[in-house]
Length: 435
Image (tube, rainbow, N blue to C red; front, side):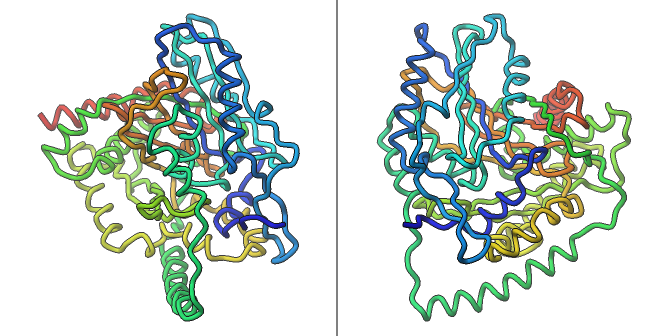
């Protein structure tokens, strides 16, 4: 019996997947146990918890009707232990070594014949800490949905069952009249999004963040003080996401200059994914739209950059998440599977005409999260790297820090150290101008 069908957007992520462009999300989560852990016992605990989550037992199964479509079905040979690995690093391991280890692991595509996820427990970090590396295919869910599933692997909280139930809830049925009205309304929205995409496509020279296709990845892990974000917002207004985008604009400006490339005379453009999930968590799968935000790397003054970002994001919010070229995920979700099988790979190659990088802010709840009693101290999300893009950026506000995961194309970026330093310096510069 067929299970839940993949949406058009879910199928699109499958079509974009390739050896040099794996479409899995990731995370590096660092825990600080109070006692020495037994890695094999902890891995067995993770496998046991994963085995109890129905979503993690599902794999993609192709369907004949409609052509090119697929659905989720339980893997009859599922063994959670095959999805959980253990690795020990040298006890003198630094954060850079953890990032390098995670980058090599992230390069490996997921086996789509099995449930598309993997965990790796990494021990041997300083002060007895350990890391949990997470890899989950984007066809499975978006960032918000991924956290809801991952919560089932952590120590149970009262909210855990609610999160898991919400992500597995089927979409409510629509009456024929509602379906007709929605179809007519969606047709108009689709035309508007498609027209906006054509208008937004840029016949510019090659982007300074363009890169050759490569299966090699580099990672950078950056932690900023959330108190600095509050200081900046108090002085200049805007949201925490506005501040993040302004900091990243300054970092990319500085990084390009360090690479011997002059900051461009025009802004870079970021695709900023926007969750369309309701407060109840919505259904499983991807529920995304997006905004295109101009990153003003051409402006020298950090405060002017922040104001420019705010203006760009305010225009996006005024238009709403179902309008504009950034809403291309919505359009993808409404296209039938055969269209994605024929055209999505080509569209992915042309992504640079629309945006230069992806910047996503993954929402995390303000909870004290633990694994086998060990408190979660750091969590760095990682966004899939779009084809021919040099850098993809993900961030999460957790505790009193802003955790930023930088994923870079290894053929274009030999070392993420300079980019990581540029993020730190850009944040410090903007904070100094806010005191």
